[in-house]
Image (cartoon, rainbow over the protein chains, first blue to last red):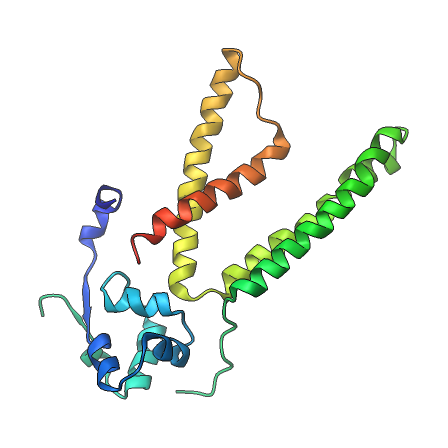
Length: 78
Length: 133
């Protein structure tokens, strides 16, 4: 499917610490999904770097984990 | 974080109840009117009977849009991409069939266009979803 999304190579790719922070708190993906009001599939996709959250959702992550956004999400390679 | 009302969440059971409920109403109206249209003389009444099944279809589209707005951001994105992909594929097929009419293939009836578009949307959804799951 990569050939369909060739132009996406121009996007900035984001790394995140969501899985690490979630496991530290012993939350399941479903637990975190309920806290954020999203589906478990969305949490799974974010943790696997398949989907980057919107700014609004990123702020919700920061609020739930009590961490600044910049700690949770960083551009790849930085 | 401000106190916010929780976003309504997509629930599969609720969606299928609303969707199939709407289709059930559509089916009842369709069967109630389809025979009577033939028997009715041309005029406003005939047109009203012929168009009666269109009204419950509004409920079908309403159920689909409610499900979309209840979905979270990733699922909305998946649906948008799947709809775009399905519309492009179906558009190509319509153009193909348009030219094929000159070669003798039958016309696609107008009434089939919306269901076929929804069908291609449905086919493309799992294809797009693979990118995210």
